Amino acid sequence: MGSRIKCADNSGARIVQIVSVPRGGSTHRRSSSAGIGDMIIGSVKKGKPEMKQRLVNAVIVRQKRPFRRPDGVMVEFEDNAVVLVTPEGDVRGSRIKGPVSRESAERWPKIAAIASIIV
Image 1 (cartoon, rainbow, N blue to C red):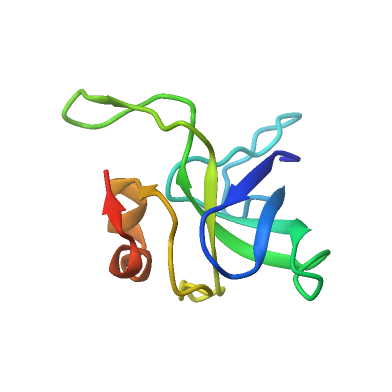
Image 2 (image 1 turned 135 degrees about the vertical axis):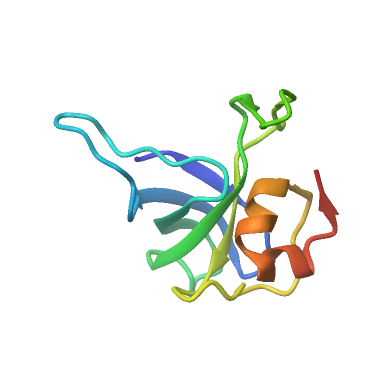
């Protein structure tokens, strides 16, 4: 929570700050955390004037921290990135810049449909 993440689509937002993680399992005195494929609620910090200071739903499509896939391969990306979505899971933009993880593409089929590269 509180992390500022790059927005990877053309919806008008450029930087999104994580406000909360819905359905993120919480423990007493521990901040909620999110990873690849999780939906977050964020506040737009940089972008078009009509998008700034709005609460938006977003899905994390890339993360810097290495994570292990079931087949044993460790995967990491160069940056952290999100894609803005509606509460139902429809993508708000029409293009996604850069690669998208396979885990988020399997969980959110509408993101997979417009992704250019799935890693």
